[in-house]
Structures are given as structure tokens and as C-alpha cells.
Length: 387
Image (cartoon, rainbow, N blue to C red; front, side):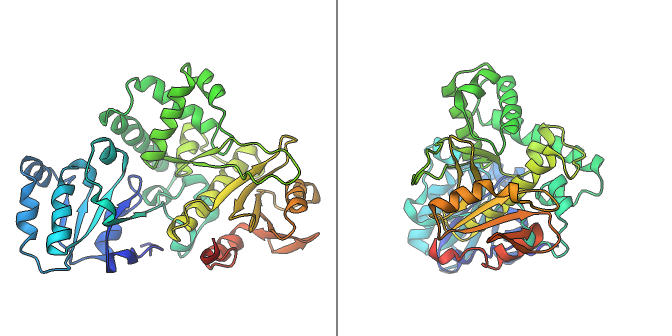
């Protein structure tokens, strides 16, 4: 139904870890790309019990395969000790593996064998616009881009799916992995994090809102990052004239999470909530674009102490982007970009909006959201090779 952007090209010569949050489509993708590969699904209770009881069965079974065979193991974090067998098979039998999972955190915390650089890391993000033939921007803003959520036929079905996802995955599974002791406090933290989604993270303020200390807040954000549930966008820190803020911004990995936690069921264009959701979706697409091009630190934001800001800076001031959900961008929307261009005159400056047509406004590009997304995935916003 969706043709995913990533083809996992690394598997042609290497083993890979394929990480991604639940329901982003890891199993579907590996099934489509490697339909004939031997597969072990560790969410299958029979397979799990057998290999949990005797991990060496994996080596015994796969030793029979020809050299250079590709093998898929789904949800590898369920039995981390299997990585010892995988390591042996890579070294001694020259097998290649796709090792998928929803979190590297459990593997690392368990002291698992991370294969000493013998497996390259890949990430599967939620859907992106170029993967959907009839991409609907408004649907994406309301539903998010997790495949099951994007496809929900109506708001009631969507809300039930979101509820199940957040209750089972974000809360129960994190608790089951013993990552937090006080689930009620963590639930409150998730809500506060949703309120700060797309905003600067001030540890002390969030700690006060949650009734916990700043150290615990930082640990909770670390959990969200390492379980791929969210990410921190750093501030652009190269100072030229103006004093700039250093705090990072936080975003959940998919727009559906803040929408649900904040009760944003019926987003209306022209409202502040719609504007926040619009910005989040655009950031989500840029994060995926950079991730699929293996650019680890290509995105930041700029905010001065005089409250001038630019939502997204790509590379070292290669592209500066402001997101406005307005139907017609006005000169008053250009303040942050004008200030940034004063300090970085060679930077390409773009406003992404709900305008009907692309245009030039006093030397600043105004791009309708759909045009921007098409250009992004066609490498027309930035050349990933120079990042």
C-alpha cells in the first residue's frame, strides 16, 4: 500500500540493526524487501520460548545455511543474548542479519553484545509524504503518520487506535521494561512533555509541573529518546551578533502522540493548535529525511534572547525555515528569518505555509507545504551530500 523510501541498501554487504518505534512498519518492510529470507519473530510465543530456553538453537539451525545468506530477526531486544550467536554466525559463517527492534535501550542496559560495529544502524520512521501516492496534508495533521493511524477511516476509530497505542506502548511497555518506577508520575510527565512539544525544554519548569526533580526529568527525556518515542532538537549555537538560547526543543516521534495527549481531536486551520501540529509535521518530515540520508546532526533551531526565532536550521546555516500555517504569509511573519539572514547572508531562507502558490516575498521563498515536501524529498531544498 505504501512504498517506503528506505530500501535498507546496507544489507547488500552488511548486517544491520533496524530500529523504529512500534507500528512504524518494520516487519512489513522487511517482509516486502526480503520475502525469501529465513525469519525469526520473537513476538511469536513459540519462537520466543524455544530460543529463550536454548539460544544456541539459533546457531545450530543457521549453520546449515549457505555463506552470505540474509536472516531477519524481529524484535531482537526480546532475547538480547541471541546477539552472541549472531556475532558468531557473522564472523564464522559470513551470514548477514537484519535485526529489528523498537529500542536500543533495552539491549544496551542488558549489557548485550552490540556486535562491535559489525551491524550498521538504520532507523525506520513513521510514514513520510513521498511514500503516500495521494498524500493528504490535513489528514496527516489530524492523524499523524503511523500507518494504522493515518489510514483510520474516521476520528472515532483514530482515537481508539491512539488510545490503545499510548496506553499499551508508551505506558505499559515502558513499565514492563522497568524503565520507570512510578508510572503515575511518568504519565503526568508524558502529558507535560506534550504541552512542551515543539518548545524549548526548561528542565526546572517541567520538574515543577510534574512534582519531581530535574534529574528525573532528564532521565525521562532520555527514556523517550532511547526508546525512539521522541527526540531533542538542539539550538543553533554559532553566535554572530545576537545572544542566542541554548536549550533544546523536544518533539514526540509522531504527531499523533501530542494530538492525543492534548485532546486535539478536531484541529481547525487558523488556530494555534493547528499551527503547532503543522510545524510538528514539517519537522517530522525533515528529521526523517535527514535520518534516511544518515545525517545525524543536520537539524537545529535558532532563538535569541530578544525572542527572534527560526523553526529549523539545516546544516551550518545552509537553509533556514520558518513554518506558518497561514493561508497567506505576510511581511510580519519574516522577522526571525530577516534577523537570521543579517547574520548569515548566504543562507537560503524559506517560509513554509498554506499559501496556494509558491512566491518570492522580499527575497524570501514562500512555499506551500505540499510543494516544500515534494522539493524536500527530491533533494531540492538541500543537497544531503554536502551536509
